[in-house]
Image 1 (tube, rainbow, N blue to C red):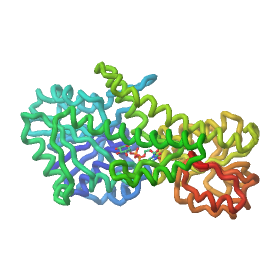
Image 2 (image 1 turned 180 degrees about the horizontal axis):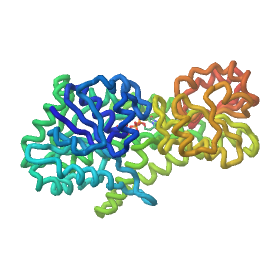
Image 3 (image 1 turned 90 degrees about the vertical axis):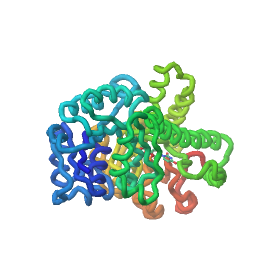
Image 4 (image 1 turned 60 degrees about the vertical axis):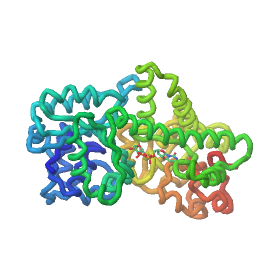
Length: 431
Ligand code: UDX
């Protein structure tokens, strides 16, 4: 199948590389020249395990260009551009989606299929289908559920495939079946539905995941005033198969380029549709999530005598989660900033995210080496659960630091090990 992928950011670059891996002939198109230059040279513009191997410049099935006319040679066109929050608001900004489809129109015709992958407010696909119709091409919506850090395997072996199609269009599902032949043969469930349901599957899945995390973080708040242990609580309720243990890790909360913005945009869309009350609870989900960041700062403050002024605090982690260099809406970076705002002398480190963090918070102090970051610290704060931090030897770390306070914002350290080595350990929702 000849495929074009419009937008070569996180989603698009991974999708293009994986479609070539599935045997298709793919052209990735983006307006950003440096992105295209990197991808053409086989370099991933961001850290994603396994992606570099798929991007080899020798791969004859995969090429990248800034020229939208290259889409003419393809028959299926994936729209994979970003939908950030609008400036100064919370709704999704559809500028890039609209521009991508407009740019594509002169290059498509009968027999072409435009496939939306971007996360969009419900109703977008139906509107874009009208835009595409005069060309004779048709449109399908095929949301993406990939997780950063697992993007390649999530794309090659997804949990499910969802196709939103026009009910008069029998061909769209057949074309998508051809594209996803390999995962379908491997048994991936496939759901063919209407546009609105397909769009909603994506945002409701993210809303559910965010709610699950904030639920356990709310339980952490209750645990903190009752002396209970939220980790044991999560294990115990997680054994109920209806609940499940995954996404019940209490800590500094969720961040990244998807969950925070998607729950806000979903609320904004529900308001527009006159059913804002249906998603009012997502405001609480967001509030609980943001409160946990301040809780980490408060724990550091309490354990350093009530005032952070002039205190040396090491922040371990900047990425919004391990195996990623992404700091978009990162709780870790926000905690580092809040500590600095409260007067602490902050030094931060992360195995992958220092460069990306420096771009948005250039004034914070970043060091590559964990030992150098911790040396002379009054307190150590873990906010991204990289294995490099989880595996630290508390006795060795005690030899580097000045103080003996460790705040575990991801509940990822062994509290008894750290206490045995003389540390005052504080986790979230743990006694
Ligand atoms: C998410 C969805 O999982 C994915 O399906 C969707 O396509 C995009 O958004 P991603 O943003 O890559 O993927 O990260 P995810 O692994 O879901 O983690 C999101 C955030 O939740 C991270 O900050 C993580 O640290 C946090 N989290 C996750 C918790 O705080 N506790 C948990 O138990 C799980």
